[in-house]
Length: 610
Image (cartoon, rainbow, N blue to C red; front, top):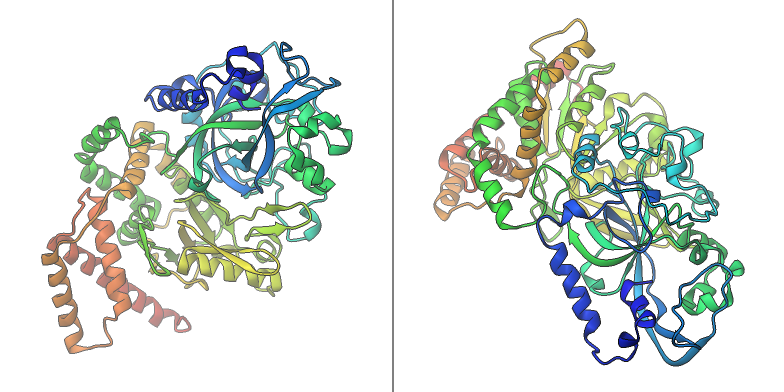
């Protein structure tokens, strides 16, 4: 129950309704306090603190993605018992008698929220180290219907142990974690939708609490797949999470719609509070990024931070480029394109065309473990990422597209339900010969639509619903990828290390943590910079394009011009420049010419590539 609803039957002054605007004032007070720049340091986070350390009805925050939005629900916002002097607090086995003369029915909506999918271990660790310290609550011992996530074998009573970095964040979990982490593979079998309780994480192997967030105002300002930092009142009352046939009938008056739900819906919408706590929203802040090294809100501090870092952009870029060149076996051109890919971002849409996307296909990648190690290095640089091994078994069995389960009335998650600016690493080197079944074909089609249009068509059985996204896709392949891409760069190694694993490990270990943190800030910051092209430079680019087509109209197409403009934009931003200069345009033309020359060379060598 929302905090100030409790006040109404605990406080006679509140019940007198002498000041009908008091609710708005309470809400405004909390919003003002939570907007203070130090608020993140004193409010404990559900992402970082085990649930049993937190007191019920206390203020907490949750960094999350809105995975599902349930139907609006009616509830008793104001009510009183027969004896107005009674300080009511729901307890198991208590019998309530309501006095309906002053009852007010209100409407709210419930969001099912999960931790941000694919959040990198380094981002979690830094968030944990800066989180508010919490003394374990000894005044509350929940009567659980099911084991809570803090009782798992690796969740010790010490939060430090709980938050140790995972070396394989997307690995398979053991059978003891079936209720508290995503299953190791998301199958497409419909029976999985509502036959058992799961936390419905989009990615396999994810850990952490899911949350039912009760939203009371501003419903139109939220949408599916938003990434938010939510501040609210924690509720873990087990009485409100038992199935309808076991509930005291008087409790159903608090939310009359519960009596109309099927058992499958109740299982999905009212899971045990020990697994899925309730959070009554006071304030929610949209997250433009989830990099804990950057200020997360547009404030004066953020402006000062950006201004000071812009001075270092060129030098940090040079250091990062050198690092990526070593990682890509001495290939400086491929490193340049990888850097540009990592700062790309869909900044606007024109009709159905997403502008700013830059899907990169690194072809000619060495086999064995190179691509896996390359992903681990990318994962160390970006706050959100996921590696999809495109083996035949994975493509035929994994659920990539979210699907509506009408029996449980919920959206069953898929691996493409990701937060904005997530780096999706598609490892095509794992694809072997064989037959794709209908599910595999649908998955390949979904990946193609994601790359080309930055959208995912969710499966609602009777129709598909289009959801726009903003996901950076990097495809590694042996030859040219079977998937579309904005840019293909054949890898040309300049070194051939005898032991690839040792070579890449040595390169990574040679970087100091402070240097890696600079790279992390650089990549996130470059995405947020504004960009423009002056009329003068626009005219120069148009004239240049006409000149390029004079001798051979087929040599440069409109698609080539679009790609070069995207590269020019990313080159400018990578240097901290927010406008395109003539030098920037000439540099973009030059590296595109080198890339095209290399691609033509590769085609003549392989012969069979399109």
